[in-house]
Image (cartoon, rainbow, N blue to C red; front, side):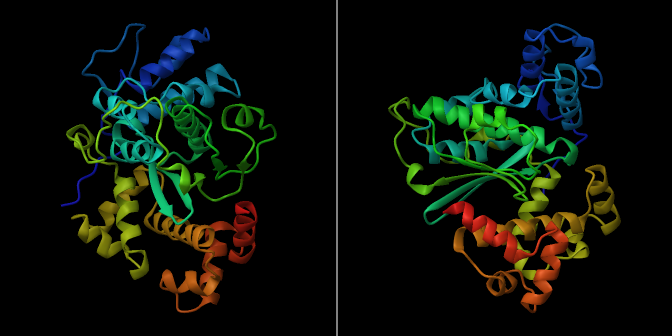
Length: 339
């Protein structure tokens, strides 16, 4: 049975990241009532330990903070305090991480606690390692803000635990903003935009370098009890499902059957997350194509075969529909940035 929760389910502890947002906003003299609006938090006191917000409420809180603070550095400053955080065993596991590889494994395992709004996905391919994020709850208008916050969180944590600034390359699924000063201050100068996914790339050689601040006996990279305490989101589970079957052209009908719902019900669930089945499938196909272009330097014919297209012409037509660009041009841009 496929288990998941939706954007309207109360699964995010208010005392974790939501309270950090309120605390930061208060430190910037923000008007708190404007921040509480629609968030489920309506008072200045620390929320009770048992209070949980829905992802929709947490997204509303972030949207309020961005609007009320009105500063270009808000996402980056919130990211700096996000990890390792104070989330009990999950944060303790991050603090014990002995290397970048262990930290990424812990982050992926504890995604529901450590990174609830964006799902981190860790891929290693030869000399290149990628960490990219997918939307957990369907918040397309907030994705640039969320990507900046999450990338800053990971980069800051790695710099602290690793004792140095790691040579990440940052890819953003957005057009280049007019000003990138905050990106450069918090992330560095190696920035790329119009990438069709939000990702951080790094040479694989950095994965297993020992971190000087690690405890003598780091936690093993296994699925601990705290990592399984909350089921993943619908969009996260659906992405994993489609990714595993991307070469077999999954259909709405078969997917709904495997999720034990009718096609109409799955459509309704996805509509509540501001998306639909074809958009989710196209996203997975796009990400796989970009991954093959970037890491394996695959050509159009190879990617078309991998994705189950009858020929490269159909693939090129579909890829342009997905991204607005031809695969050749985008592949050249990706490879030129990798050199």
